Amino acid sequence: MKCIKYCTAVAYFIIIGMITLNFSGCAPDKRKDEKDIKLGFLVDALWEERWKRDMDLFTENAKAYGANVYAKSASGQNELQIKMAMEMIREGLDVLVVVPSSSKSAKSIVDLAHKKGVKVIAYDRMIRDCKLDYYVSFDSRKVGEIQAEYLVKKYPKGNYVLVGGSEEDDNAKLLWEGQHKVLDPYIKRGDIKVVLEKWTEDWNPIVAYDNVNRALKENRNNITAILASNDGCARTAFQALSEHKLAGKVGLTGQDADIAACQRIVEGTQSMTVYKPIKKLASKAAEIAVMLAKGKEAPVNTKLNNGFCDVPSFLIDPACVDKFNIDEVVIDDGWQKKSEVYLNAIDY
Image 1 (tube, one colour):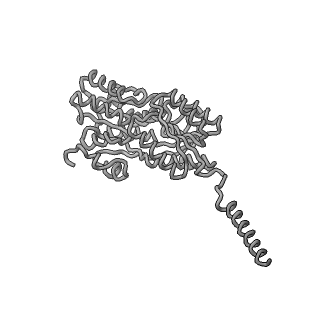
Image 2 (cartoon, one colour):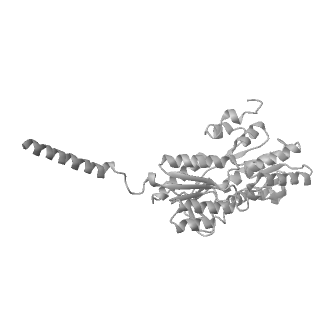
Image 3 (tube, rainbow, N blue to C red):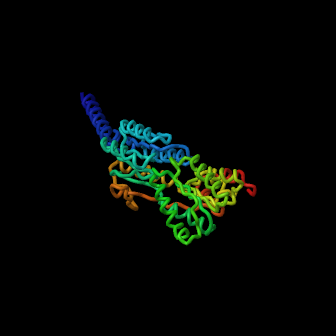
């Protein structure tokens, strides 16, 4: 009888212990944590090399925090991006990260998201005229300044062609401001003459090619430098210059440090590019997205006005890249491989 009572007591305490453990330490925490977090990453298009890498790096970093990521590209179509945003919001996202096709039209994405309690981060392109939750990017004015400063040091006089970005992209306008901050004193003195200055619709390289080709023909190839706002535009500017046998003889800028641009730089057919450390941007964006999803306060190092409010922002510094520092800035940072950058270089 004593044995039965003893065994019964032991079994009782074992069962109580198991229940206690289950509720205290072993059961999943039902509060919002990383495993419950759903993030969306909606990019404008994947035409440029960098945006696929942004998407992959953001996804990799967000997953390291335990978040689930739904990533899509709108193929440069504004209406499609809005439709995709609606579909992603219905998935029960906590935070939607957007590279807007149109800085103005993406306002509707923010409005739709907020109705469902979803926070929105604008990624490397501002979304205008709305109560945007957060903006993470680079200092685009500084990018424009770096591009123009490089050219005026090498080409303080002559005919310039300015190939802007998309007029719908707030960053393109900030680039323009930075470029003109440097160029305007030279223009006013008459040292530099801007023979053509055009926006590039949707950042489409074909549009950039047409504008550069037109400038070359109208000025009988008398072009000193081409300020191309990104490497995609620089690629087709280089194509036009090659067709006129001017590749390497005309100053040419870029932005993004994509592999083709880096190859042109070491080969001497593109003067420079601006490297924006995408790894840092994607990592910071993922960190901020998870913090916002958990209701935490995210880091801010500035606030930028989007026409409606001052948006909490985190900006990362860009860097100038030319043939003299490409190894330490771009290759040593792991952005491009040396074997690929110097693939066609004669002296490598």
